[in-house]
Length: 286
Image 1: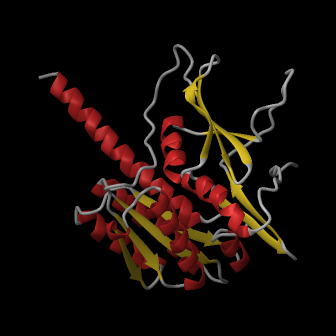
Image 2 (image 1 turned 135 degrees about the vertical axis):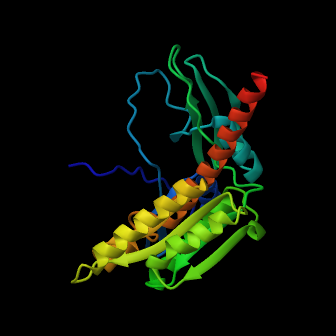
């Protein structure tokens, strides 16, 4: 029955006053959600992959308006400092094993933390969302450009917020979704790019054309990634209606281009991380 929960917070009287908070949340990977305007009032959702309500039994009120769990508190700390937000609590380990810091931005008190691994729990590898120094290629299908251009805007925003240099981003247009895998493979085989982002939009029609194209595009992109070893992010929408596509290009369901770019950055970083680990392990055996 429950689909989501949102806690509204007034953090300014104008859109300009909201910008510092929006900039911080976007830089940390939040996806844009619903946006509304009524009279002089504005509302903009920032969506996380998951959320919940925490019930407290304590003598004092919590020190923050919201607590955000991140994959790497130290990386989030660096982003917050880079954006110049007010630090309310320096980053440090807590008695309950978390890594935590608190900020104040646009009048909103926010805590960011990473829970420590429990004793005996395996420690996995998780790459950071750091695009600095990496090259990215974006393949965009022109068909349904009303949607794909918005997905492209989301992808570019995500790359910029992850630290990518605009000169390190190449955009290649193809006629439609069917041509995306061939272009993506050629770009991956060039050896120039750390990841390829595939963007397109397919809308179901009255024939089997939709299923045929959707299957071929999915197979082609996956095969290109596996055979070249270069990460490919899948930002091709496969929707029943135009309304569904619009929702996924920046409205109710966020921007799938933004999400695809984040996946590309993480996978590019992970590839480097794994390669460095393998090299280190090999050197240790010599």
